[in-house]
Length: 405
Ligand code: HEM
Image (cartoon, rainbow, N blue to C red; front, top):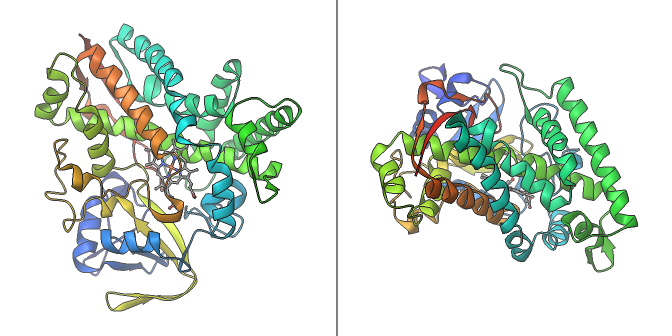
């Protein structure tokens, strides 16, 4: 953590902060809940109550500059690649209700057999190996293939789409803006989706892409640019976040042998999978920081963040707030369900994660299959490697060994 006058400064680019942001959050919650980093001119809220309020408040905390602070991502053009995530009402509300029609609970539920099939295939390969990388061999594959399935990317193209999507989100250590390879891969994906949209306009199918093209409210339909931006948002918002959730689930459970035994000890009893997923979302969420552009001054805790400021909502801190969660720094899958219902990992209010049901379904299917097929799992914690990223928190590498049932 960076230190100015003995007080921690929240610096999302700092490796120390990325490795363990929680002590900085705890200090800020106790001492400076509306924080300012003067070097980056970056403001931050860390209390659960303030963040929950900001997510619900209209007309102050704007998404119109996007949610990522990287130089090339921040600004009024953000909606071009972030779609509704980079917009405010009323446009966000209208577009969100259009895309929601292609994203109904039934459409998500219909994916279940395919999620199961993909899980069985990839997990089968892992079990055959015995020792493998949980990220490269499983958690990094499932979410993108599920998104491709939703969008209607044909089976034979999926490996290449997944490869390009990986390049889009990959960052080498110390590189904080979009590298040329990432920009190229983005262009490749945009071109690929453009062809897919054109094809669907000629010949509609029953996938999400066709549903988006056909969705209509008060006579308004989505343009090609709207559809592409939304498909792109799905890759960015729904891919890495879910991979990182699966990575954290395995990592944290195996760091607590008593809890590992609770989950894996029975004869494949999977009741604890859902609370395992929820506690992982609380304890170490993959989407830690959401940026907002202030449309007016915000006065809180005796200081003012000015209109035009860049302000972070620290979701990872809200989930550790002692005012809401008992023993917040303990990982406990038997935690009270009422407490877990208050996690802010999927945001809240008008931008509440559209993929929350899907992410939970994927995680539950994947981890249920793991519990059913493995008698125990072991993760080599020393060999795990975190990604250094401003936006997502999670592992790039997590070596795992599985003893089959
Ligand atoms: C563990 C996995 C996930 C986490 C932690 C997560 C987290 C979030 C968060 C915090 C937001 C709110 C952003 C804001 O308020 O500015 C959000 C929005 C969104 N997420 Fe997720 N997400 C996950 C998985 C997914 C998946 C699987 C999809 C779709 C395939 C998805 C699609 C979206 C979309 C479309 C939005 C934008 C909603 C809007 O702006 O109205 N997410 N997500």
